[in-house]
Image (tube, rainbow, N blue to C red; front, side):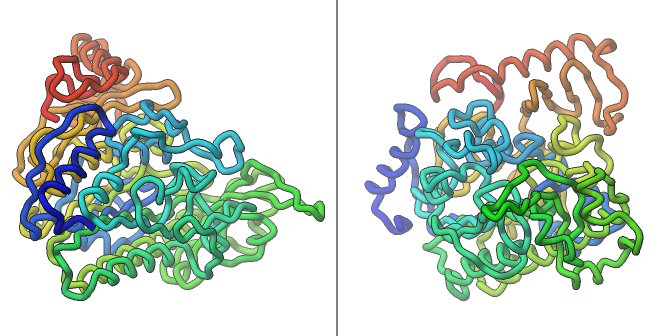
Length: 511
């Protein structure tokens, strides 16, 4: 811990942090202890505006998440770093575009792909967990990592987290905690076997971390807690283990047929999983006798009716909502008052036959560059700073969290250059920051600036056309060309701070 360290030692720590970006330094003025808030970042997995009842969901309820929105501000234009998991999380942790990854994190990591086992953060790719740890924060990740699974060299503990409970890969069976045939549940860098539903275990680990910091708080001991739920992402199960489970709905045959040594096939499948109690609580349609079962889904590619999938999805959302309530209750019981809580998601909803997510008013979902793929339900609660029941319309996203967290941790003056920007002027003072956001997926590109969206040559005015149905590129050729040029600028290297080089991302914009 360095929270009570001398000015000399603190300055050395900050110089070490920025030295990993480039050879320069800045002056860090240590704030008074009460000004350094705890930071709790809650991340859902594959979530859309149509999946939470404080926004567009009408067929399911999320009362705890809704209450969090009522206690803080809804971030109405907040985006994932990419429309799929690993690249979005790279942007979230580093503050930089995922195509800058030097360790293969610009694409989704797959546990069954042996070539992915060596992928992960490389030297010089700094996470906000490492930055805040070096600034005196206790750091903990509860839940999903998905930024390196092959060894401890690419694990959360190697990248700034002092504690970790969860899965290294992209998804797991919610009850066996394996990626189909591959166990993937960890405490630190030790693989463990634990009983319980994954969403509950993640919430419990987060609550235990909060509780370990003492009742009524200890403000000279700030913490960063990332609660990265796997819900409502589908589970990755083994057919023979779930075929008779009443809480599991098999939705699709998955790749990677495996054979155990006894020659019995262990078929991976995508599943929607919950406890029977949560299924009963949400009600709705169920599979009736004579309807498609798990084996016919696998053998005949039968598609389960969306209403049935949505019911199981609603049960998973209930578990997620209950998990959020568990974390918030632990915060309230702790008595810690100087806490910034952010709720968001790693990308938009999965609307395929494997799942049943909804992007609400927006078009598209996971894997796509339409608004539904990146604009995610997001909330900021910051008592005494952000008014309860408010909205913040600032264009922002996960890519902005690293520079923003540095400011929250008390860093003043110049900070390392990121593709993301510091959002505190908008969050704290209501300033409007002129900026743009760049995205890529599968060779395609898009740019957001103001109400305008350029998507691979097409141009949309989201204020009038949130569904992205009317292409205005021919009617607004100058605007389309300008945004297309911004997309190309995002390819440029990030210049050194203080240099006169043209910025790769926010050229001419505040950072």
